[in-house]
Image (cartoon, rainbow, N blue to C red; front, side, top):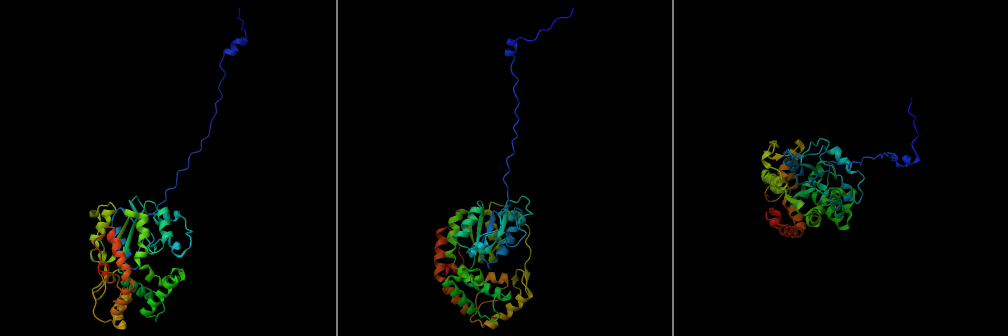
Amino acid sequence: MTASTHPPSTRALRRRPARADLLVHHVRPQPVPAVHRLPNLLLAGVSHADASGLTAGLGRHPQVCLPSTRRIDHFTPLRYGRRVDAPLEDYDLHFARWAGERYRLETSPVYFDGGATLVAEVAACLPDVRVVLLLRDPAQRLWTSFTDKMRRGRLPAAMPYDTFVDRCLALRASGSDRFEGNRYFRTLSSGFYVEHLPAWLQAFGSRARVVFAEHLAEEAAHEVTDLLRWLGLDPEILEPSVEPERCGDGETAVARSTFACAIGRLWPLAQRAGAPQRPDPVDERLGTPRQGERQRNRVRALYASSNRQLAALLRAQGYTRLPDWLLDA
């Protein structure tokens, strides 16, 4: 006899729990912020002070990565009042060989006199950067700039140094040396360091450090060691340095050409230099011909007041070891 089956009563249906519908939410993964290989160490100036020598010294440390390009100049358009069109992502190409080193070093020495806008942009785009400011006797530096531009054909071949200085002064007086078309005559204005240094010190504070080219030329190992310690790096693990090239007269030079060696011997005769002068250690490293005493004294007089103010500013910042051109100011 088959048992009869009865449909569940309405009360039983009411007691049975209703099946919950399953809702599936598709959650999109949050995008991972892009991490670009921005420089966190910047050699921001000045030009014609052997910045390449300091770069090479720092690059001997295994925790310092040098870019594939000698000068990146990402922020240089701001120096001429133009905007920066290149994106920060471009730094990824310059540091493509970065392998986890603690520092990525950019050397762009024309940044130094770029003005408050350039300094502010560097601080905003590179918030963790440390800045090295390499200064040199501005009178000697102007002479090096002139001889370098003559060698490269960037000035009229027959232009005397005094005429070059006069042109720089005239453009400075009118404010026209800030135009890109007059950039070859801007070195004189950029040598008034006290007009440019405060913006860097105010923006970066203890993350900015001033180094002098004369100290670097005379005691390179000591200066590089001090910088590495400031960066928190062990100076004892530097790779061996490469012996610099030498000219026939025994002077050291960095990438000094045969032309530079020849002009170094002949230029003093052409300029009819007066009394003998103490060789400039930076010019000796760069292979720059010696300058006439009269021309040098004229330009030093132009910078005298600025140098005195600069010496006072640096002493107030705790710098006690100053080069002769500041001690004599």
